[in-house]
Image 1 (tube, rainbow, N blue to C red):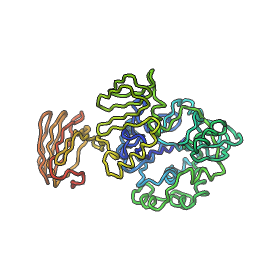
Image 2 (tube, helix red, strand yellow):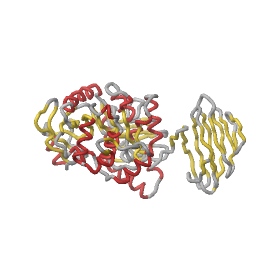
Image 3 (spheres, rainbow, N blue to C red):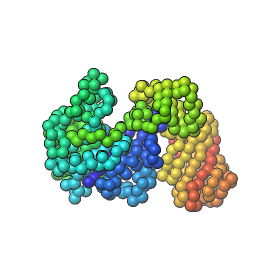
Image 4 (cartoon, rainbow, N blue to C red):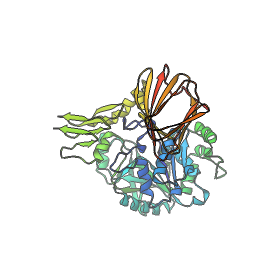
Length: 462
């Protein structure tokens, strides 16, 4: 079996933990040390070889995707990470993934699923995959329906028709309903939530694209074969610039005559809001969920996460409180769907907090901004062993570097020096400079920027 994992996302619904540059699939929201993306890869590991795992994400998340895949599988094929030049919804993304599957695998089954969902009963989930294989083996496009446990207006619904093999024919797809309709749906065993998880033979999937959305199909295929250079950034940039934005549900699933559904009750949750996080989390005797440095008295049904600060509460009820180093969200438990609207306001006001965390991951390590004013900025920089920050210079600021731990090889113009703990150097404006970590431990240093202009675009690389 092959899988295509969809790892896009805008990082709005779980703000401030998630950001545009660090959406929820990269976050650890559970009891394990894995991110949601890593958990998805591991969940499929018993049935899918790592060389047959494809991930589609944004070019803006390239570093995070490579780091997280390497953390759980050191030999994860980097060529299996496909970076979208722009978001055009799931229909083009999935077809691009299908076009990158080698021709010798086109008779195999392929799963398409999001990277950021929670499935608590993984063994039962694998059993349902086996049921879906029977349907896929009979030329069906299979969708997985989640047995609903409440009248949910945030999901689309699937209505099952007559039984067929190990599942049911799909009678119809229902848009996100109003509450009256949702209450009606959950009274009938015919209805399940649309989880956006699909399975079919690779060839069946591709042929349905060809039949139902030929214009999109011909952007990626020619003469029944994938077009050349589909991993070339210039080629794929032109294709994505031309294709229409469309979801796979509208483009393929709702039009196909081959649809079947396998209902399942596997502890699924799309973790699409802070209320969802509250629902799946272990609670204390007062119904509270806490994480980090939190002390509560006489509080009930609250979700309170602390990143660093001590958070105390007295007499709170039905409250969401999420603290990070640069932002604090306070929200009624019943209004968490509106967090997305709040982030849109931050975006309109050009607030950097909607986009970045104070800690930013780079191929060489990371930096964490701990203070900024109009004329100086303080960062803690970590450089991984053997990595370096390449030659560059600034025109409007100087930088003081103080080594906290580890060893640094600093090059300024043509001169190099080695610095160790408690030693420092000053980088003046217009000086070409780089730093390399020659040691076996992480290099940690303090960077103090000082100048009239501290924006990230004040840089010229060699």
